[in-house]
Length: 637
Image (cartoon, one colour):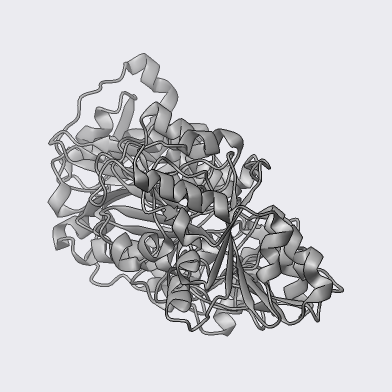
């Protein structure tokens, strides 16, 4: 055995004391740090509280802890004053009642508070794993700000717990850096993941649509991140760079969905700062080299985060106003949580190549009585993510993409994903605030039919996305109209149309998805979305038939889009109880007539006043026997 090993072992033995003895070093007026999350040193906290009668004016600082916080209870006001760097459940009441303080700060910047002595620490109470053969203890499940606190405090007191996993990465402290060691064999505090409810699962399903294969993810805590994890089973080659993780990650690693093979920073490593979960997770990370535990000055540094290409950051909010301001640390004037790492990751993801910063939020609160999407934030509510930082907002009703959008577009987009019962009031309030056109249409109770969305491949190999039109498509419809040729517009409207004002465009973009339907073909060119075709119908209630109209942009004519749209529109119409289609076609638009004849239905067409009147019923498709052949077409009906 080497002399080095003998030395640290003697140091270890010399430093072992019981919790009460260790806490005798605490003196009046000191600032004491308490370890984070599931790594809270419970025996030391209890011993410190027992000394309460002998002490005065101690400040206790930490981020969220899972254990009890007796120092924040009533009756200790002259002894302990908690300063929350993140407001957790166990101190929320004390902060709300003014018996404890809250310091708003980005999680990435807390270590600098300690290291520069802007917030000097007298004592750090931490929990670590037993030392390895070289005398190094692991910070285990919480490296986060614990490492910087231990390296900055005048005195370090550590609970040594054999139940603490030995996590790898920048996550070690040597025995010689610890002043007192208290052996404790208590089980780590567990945080059992809540089973996501219906709303969380709907939000998770929408979020997963934004996650491309090969993305690197940051996930927060709660039922919505858990729901996202449940929907990732079909994804491929995902990576992780996050501040925290819970149990759901284990199955994704085991299945190979998360392998970190396409990360651009620390390839092959799940980068994390702390974990909170069950014993299963704690055992899984023990000595597991796929996990790279790092302090938050690394994991949460926006510049570091941005080095991960296709970085997807997912964070929650309390309320969002119609301009895109995000409140996530307070309920009105009451502090509820903290800034945490939200802004760190939102900004990091926004600067990542192909990155996507996402805010998730249920549409309502208080049992559905209150909308979380609001005209303006509650009085006293804090803006955590600014309207300039926000990119995507997701509720159970869909996705609002706000980046680069003006306030009018933002307000309309957010109202469209609010709960239907609040949309009318939000619309009227937004008009009064001059956030929207005075004549803006929005069908408040209509739910977007996501089931009619589909990915398609044109016969030349171009991938397109076919979906029902949305209220927010007006700018894209405008662009498609003004970039189409005069001939294309003439074939659609039968006359020369040189302008398409908002009043007309919004009629295209607002349909009830049953009696009226409009389907668009979307194409993503680099980071820019573009509409290249549309097809619509309007139902005649008298005969249950519907009149159809098509428009295909010049750049995409002769590529099979008209045939694709007709088949898609027929499926939707049949599901909505429509018996067939009627259409008016100019004689020179032979290709559109050909598309109707190739529909598989028995077509009746008559020339009246220089226009072909086309009519066909869907039930005739079986008699006629449909053809799957696609045909060329230059234009529109």
